[in-house]
Image 1 (cartoon, chains in turn green, blue):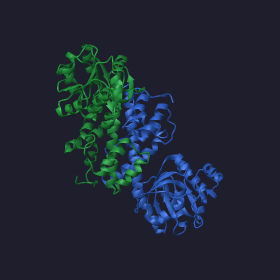
Image 2 (cartoon, each protein chain N blue to C red):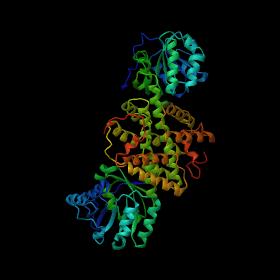
Image 3 (cartoon, helix red, strand yellow):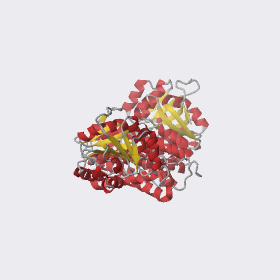
Length: 309
Length: 309
């Protein structure tokens, strides 16, 4: 299921790629396209980010995606959510201007239902979709080593091979049906979110019991109770450093998508729903833009390292 | 905080060690004591296990702990729970027969409250306690490589140095106060239990959405949503093999201790309490003696690998 696409593919038969959304993941992906020798166009509403990408070697940049509609044959969308994806494709008029057969890789984290809705509308215009959420964080994006969980037609994978080769370290081909890629990402986010919330609950309980938190961290990270998220995020708690690597509000959104997905599928969420409530509560405390490890601050009556920060 | 004790310590000044409870952890610990050259006595109610340990080289074995009270100066207790610990020490009369200064290492997973109660009673008889829960599973126990999370006096650590050297790969000295070792173990079990329950919830949601479970497993184990428990336990689900490596009922007990601890400390458990309910429900479905990954069977309306097993 796991395919590695060649970097620096022969680009002769390909026109350009337009990367829309130059946040930490999008910028990394766009620069990786430039590095791989693809003719790369960048689109964002932030002109500073556009200038950064232009200076890095992009062919051209713009705040208006339609500017490049005629010169590209692949689009990579890395905006924040489904409503932004829909706005760019269908409200801004981009979709009307793209050439028949243009392949659109939708890499924002969205629900399977939204992914399927988007596919239907793209098909009406003879455009091809790959349902292709990503993970790995900004560092992997910058290195062209994102993990892509993708579903779609063989044709979609084929057309996007140069782009996948440029941006991905790993490509999981989940299946042929649009929605499967999104679902896998959402199930992954269930685990990621619950693990952060569980890490916070455990460390807060240790604090409440006056266990030294560095000892607790040392024990857990060397034992079967460890998770990737515990090890990564609880270091931020030990450091008292809640500057955002990934924000609380990302999990308000992503566990919200988990909850929507479970509702659609009539599935009970014993753990993901209370974890969502923990992040929502943290956000309502004004912590939405802090690092997601700040969810530990919902626990009162404990003392945390660097409490004054 | 992490100390490694020498194996094969000079044993001249030490009398024997009595290991009580020869389950998978206790048997491994007892054999490790024999291998390290300690004069080892074994106690269990199961004579087959006693014969196994005798054949391995134990000095003597018995169903009655008091038989060896006068020839040992250290006791390692690895029975199932606090009520068994209390029964052996205080009801069976062992405590009355032990020599002054005998050091008792209590390695069962028990609450901090029980640990403190036991210490008070041991102190009345001039016996020394180490609050020393363990982890690592049967394989590590057999190799003399258990992880020990211990709290107690310097004297307790000193007296038990030969035993810790024989049975432990790692010893965390949490602090001086009895109860701290138990609390660290319980916080660890919070994470372990929640992670198994979250793994089950995620894989069941993937099954409900018709995502191939081997693909889902592959994605998660290579991404930030991974946990030690997800990787270990969900392999059992993929294999359809619920033969117990560790049983559902262990987490009914251990998450019960988490819940008791939180009640004592007035601490809210957003995730550990619903996880406990998941294991309790699984146990009530008749799955208590199955592998703890069988908690995934509480989800109806999904198809799992090896459904006929």
